[in-house]
Amino acid sequence: KNQVEQSPQSLIILEGKNCTLQCNYTVSPFSNLRWYKQDTGRGPVSLTIMTFSENTKSNGRYTATLDADTKQSSLHITASQLSDSASYICVVRGEYGNKLVFGAGTILRVKS
Amino acid sequence: EAGVVQSPRYKIIEKKQPVAFWCNPISGHNTLYWYRQNLGQGPELLIRYENEEAVDDSQLPKDRFSAERLKGVDSTLKIQPAELGDSAVYLCASSPGTFQETQYFGPGTRLLVL
Image 1 (cartoon, chains in turn green, cyan):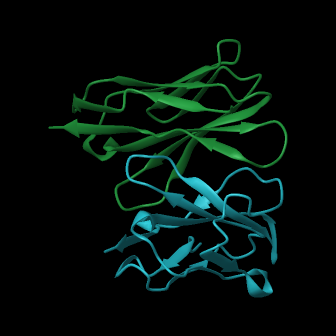
Image 2 (cartoon, rainbow over the protein chains, first blue to last red; image 1 turned 30 degrees about the vertical axis):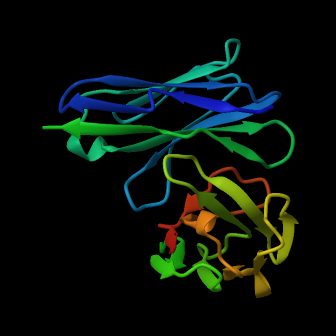
């Protein structure tokens, strides 16, 4: 069964600190993996997308990594800001069809 | 560029009542998606349209849910009758073409069934 599991479920960090969110998936064959940020009361917004051949992708203070062999991805946030408080969702697309498998998300809260 | 527009933003109804949600995708986007997102979960696809054709409705509970996308632009998702378990956020998303990957999400409609 195609699954995407994220950890931790929630995280609280101090402003200015770094953090890393994890995503493990079983989707096979794999096409790409995307990290979304979902602010409270808003729809998800795409942060990064990586294909099989890419192992790192940055978007400002967000850096995503991908290990296609172990089927793991991480999202690293550097020098966190209060506005980073959101849910971060890992989404994996299989090679066939247009279906996406969504993780449950990690809720991040950045405190001052 | 205007984003995906959804209305209403919030809806509270009693069980067994009907409810409808409306979505206006980004102009020019051929593919439209309806998702349901339960609290603390990722979105789950209900139905996907390519233009006016529903190409994937395998996860849509057809006994009570219906959707339409007349003229291949706006879309409406309806629940009749609503049940307590339908309480969730209903997200609409659109993408430019059939195999385009970036989906742009609307703010969602938060439904509470009492």
